[in-house]
Length: 222
Image (cartoon, rainbow, N blue to C red):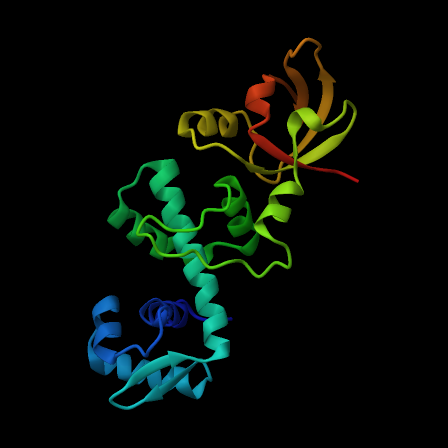
């Protein structure tokens, strides 16, 4: 397990060297709000562990092992910033601080669902590129794996993968109905003439309008 402080240092070095070059000790210290002496001590530790390389008076750079971790954390951070800004309405700087606290506990599964829900955003609110995930599929292939609720036949069951909508009120209504990522849904009846779809979630029958249901993306059970 990599500690949160290690992840934070690696992420900061990644941010500072994303366009090339090395991260200076003073820049790392300013970004983290610590003393240069503390940074020097931590960088020496990270270098011994094989996460970074350090050249005195030049700066620090990520080695392959450290870059792999840093990209994952940077991806989670920027996705969370996007979510907090677009979906929750939290201002950019406050969203940055909140994302810093949330990124270390965000699972890979939650990260993937978050990315799908927001239709694979490419940048964070600050305009920085969101690193790609490590899955061996393109964003287009990832998006096409799941079906709309209306595409699933009666009598079948499926699991909610993610939601696709930029309307916060609509998302809140659907989530409040129980359609959260990971929940299993049984499709009982599709009423004719564009009528609602009757589904069962954990023993509760729900009628959901097709237009609202198509915000849901489902993975059909085999």
